[in-house]
Image (cartoon, rainbow, N blue to C red; front, side, top):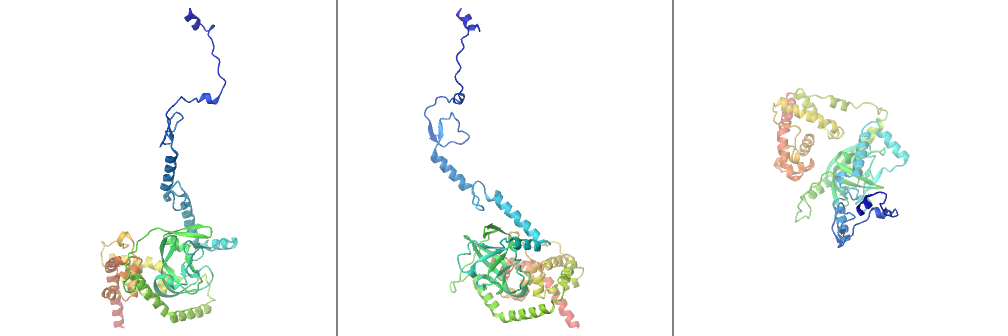
Length: 424
């Protein structure tokens, strides 16, 4: 009877429902022995018997921050390879470089000046010394300039003038060399810096830095340089002089440049006289030298002879170097493959670590120092390697590359010139 009573829905006793409470919907089972220790976030549940230890959590958080801290933006959570800020800076700088190489570069610079935007930024790490030791990065200059001869580690004498400086004036160049810029805790070597007394500060061109492979990060009115590659310099000091081999050569080169002051002043006077005499010439007139170099082709050795004759003028090489490099490489390729019928030598030429060798730079450096024989007899190939942007240890590579690509060409050219003089 009792069973029927219970099973009959008419006599079923309804248990009272409790009041609705959110805490009752998520009641936790009774637990005991809760311990503190290392536990991952995935294992942390309401019913877990282990709770996260504060010491372990702080240690893990600090370790994770140290492992994933970007040294470009100094923010945790990612590395420099995935830094969005770095990618945005690179995109903006590359875009600006592309714009400046076109017809809009003057318009962009004019807009920046009118809007009052800053054009020069002080390099972090160089602002702790004298004014002559501070470096700036400029958005308007197209070349690197310095008026402090003591900043140069290596230097070559040069007499030319730069008019497209971004300041509508003349900079008379007396030398070109390499400098060390200290930014932060790093010492960065910058090539192709012009020495001129006509500027009152040390300026690095943003466009030229981008072409040379540097990354520039702007932070307000200052900036920092980031090199693409870092090459260690092994340079022992002389026990007698206390200078490295590079410093000894650099001091001699700077003394030589200083001894040419009278020649530089003469060049400056002649240039200004010629400039003011030719002010009536239109600036829109095409440069026929560029058109000639772009149209130059090589079908016989007379074409090679014509190009090599152009290289006798150092000022001409400096002014049209970009176009001359292309023509020079085409000449080497024609001479080796067509004239010598050698097809096993790779072009362009490469040295150690797959670094491309500029054959025009190598040719001019050897020519400037007196030729292949003089350099070999005096053991100067290490200096030639340094002048062309390589290390002292690459001197033997420079000698081999010159012998493979240039030696026969230069000999043949001198032979033809001498033969022509004798016939005349």
